[in-house]
Length: 115
Length: 111
Image (tube, rainbow over all chains, first blue to last red; front, side, top):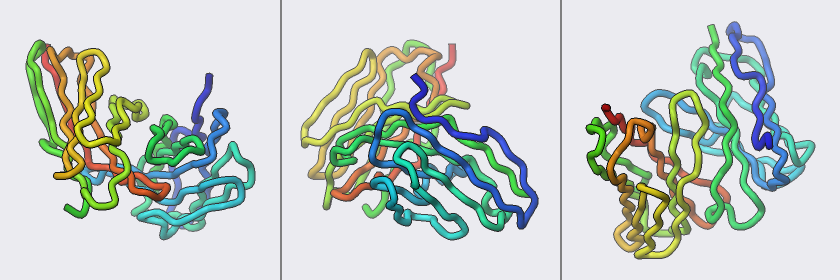
C-alpha cells in the first residue's frame, strides 16, 4: 500500500539549475498539493490541483511551476533554482469530497538543497 | 485572528504526565479543523478532522475538542509516553480546497 510517493528523497542543486519533483498517489484522489516546510514557518502551500489538467497557486508560488497531466501524478518544477528554495518539500493528496472534511495524506518529503 | 496559531511552540514533559496544547483559528468562514501528528523524519499523519462546535474526538490517549464560535481547539494527551514525542500540527479549512497550517507544537516526552 504505497499511498503518496515522492521522488527523489534528497537532491543537491547548484543555483540556476532546474529540476522536477515527482509526486505519485495510488488512492485515486482528486486533490493534490505541494507544500514547503522551513524552520519556524510550518507548512506553506506552493501550488495545488483539484483534478487532472487543473492547477492553482497557493501561498508561495513564485519560482515554481506545476503540472497534473495524469490524475495520479503531480509534478513540481524549479526552472532556475535559488538558495531561497532550499527546503523540505511535501506532497499531499485528498479525496474528492469537500477537502476540508477529509484528512490529507502526505508523502515522506524531498529534502532539497540549493548551493 | 487571521492565521492559524499554535501554542506553546514547544513543550517538555515527563513520562506519565498529561498535557494539552492549543490551536487558534479564524472563526469566520470556518469549515473544519484538522490535527496531525508529525514524527521526525516521517510524514504528517492525520489524527482528527473536526467540524461541529463542541465536537470532541478521541483516539487512545489522545483527544481533541473544538470551539468554532471562539475559534480554538485543544489537543490533550493523557499519560504521555516517549513515543508521543512529535510535532502536533493543526490546520483550518475554509469552504475552498485549501488548509492553512499552524507552525506546530513540538512535544518531547522524557522517560
